[in-house]
Amino acid sequence: MAGMRSAHVVALGGGHGLAASLSALRNVTEELTAIVTVADDGGSSGRLRRELGVLPPGDLRMALAALCGDDEWGATWSKVVQHRFAAEGDLHNHAVGNLLIVALWELLGDTVTGLDWVGRLLGARGRVLPMSAVPMDIEATVEGLDPDDPEALTRVRGQVAVATTRGRVRDITLVPADPPACAEAVEAVCTADWVVFGPGSWFTSVLPHLMVPDLAHAICTTGARRVLTLNLEPQQGETTGFSPQDYLEVLRAHTPDLRLDVVLADSDAVTDVDALRKAVEDAGAELVLASVAMGDGTPRHDPAKLAVAYTDIFTRGRIDTWR
Image (cartoon, rainbow, N blue to C red; front, side, top):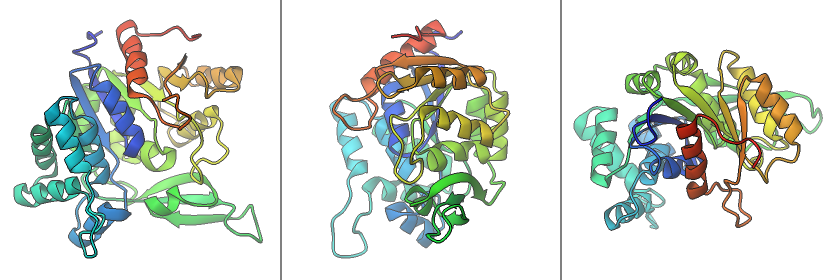
């Protein structure tokens, strides 16, 4: 197995969950690739997507910012790309990094090359890639939106609509159903030592990677070991009422061929360890319980604690399942 610093780690997801993993992983390995969902249709990203026909840059920007170092250069550029304008006109709420990324895409004519240039400017400790070469929509089957029939199923389309739905999401599909994968992302998964899923919005950030055919095939057949990091608590709307084992069951329902090696969960977020352990064992994986939450009462992962857990997993191949 590759040593800790030389292990090639691929992290999949989007938004704040992926950013937490990347903030941890950039201090664990020197070979890090982030593969980011491209289904966002809200805010600055949604406006740029609709007006220019580009991939939504927001989650890509957040991943790049998370890979910035802790020195003055990295900390400054991280703040710059995350900065949003407050204005009365069209610039209102646009993130500087979104505009920078799209400008490089237009100038260079290539999505991956543009992201690599932004990464070099920021001094990013890793590479950021989109999961697909085209923007896409998420369409979900949602239960509980009809007040006259709580069991009725409704189709909801769009990342923002799915993430904020008042009903319970049952399953998702992508539109188009067979989007082309980013070739560099597929190659990264195929050559990885470890693939890390989560944490993050389950239906809109984590699962979509497993619904891009070529990328899903690479994830399921790679020789890399796979780590699933569970969320600290359900997300209002998208995963309301979820237990830790529900995340696993949804993942397996959408991708039955996916094999997991390690499932990482926060020891304080699991109320029924036996139930979760059974679900993990049914998935053929090992349960890892560790303290990985911020500890301030918010449902956020602590990058420093995550780094410790990931280091143990990568260097030893396993971690004591009872902390």
